[in-house]
Image (tube, rainbow, N blue to C red; front, side, top):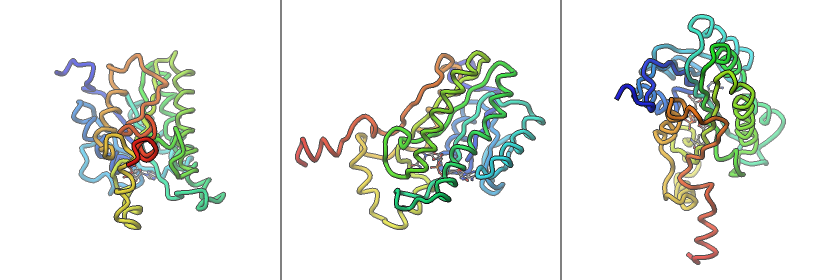
Length: 258
Ligand SMILES: NC(=O)c1ccc[n+]([C@@H]2O[C@H](COP(=O)([O-])OP(=O)(O)OC[C@H]3O[C@@H](n4cnc5c(N)ncnc54)[C@H](O)[C@@H]3O)[C@@H](O)[C@H]2O)c1
């Protein structure tokens, strides 16, 4: 089915955080859809063994270094057809763990770094007249589920994606946002190490009764990147097993008396 609008045969896709839990699923899904994938991450070891046509290395905490690495890539290869801005990090779980340095660090990696990574690509896509960006944000952008600084950064990605959609749509550039709920990836390792029973507390909040799988986030990203979504830009799609549809624990505790 090589002519399907759901495929990306011959297209080049740059994925940041490609070595992480969701990132590896993104790489697999984009390759399965026919794309040539360029993986970006902090260090080469994180990308070992992935099916990539190229790599770009940068620390997204360093905006200048990130921009410089992406500009070098663009000078050598030109703009990719699509980008998935997926790299992200959080440790400050509540307001009690925040201070100016932690705030700056989480905003730096998750928002300023994502801007530095994508801004030169947006310019190159606009000059060419086509391109699609997918930002991996979080349900934390839509309501408060902890991680205040990370949440502010993820909400910032929604605003930034809408700016691209509105101001660069005339040059053929689309930008959309995916907001995953809890996904069991290495990002949860530190929480589960602290409390191995944590998932017993997490699952009652999810209407589907489970966490989202990395491949389910990746499926949505492929959709946004391909021709099937050619009329879709500036949108925000929760992939969250129903978390943001309402409050299941409220319904169970207050109304069903469980
Ligand atoms: N796992 C979840 O529950 C969940 C929920 C909502 C959103 N997300 C988002 O999904 C994305 C992927 O997360 P994941 O669950 O796969 O986590 P992960 O920790 O498995 O992967 C994160 C990736 O980002 C990269 N990264 C982190 N800091 C970086 C930096 N300073 N410079 C460059 N790269 C850096 C890591 O090396 C890794 O490849 C993140 O943006 C995360 O915020 C995850």
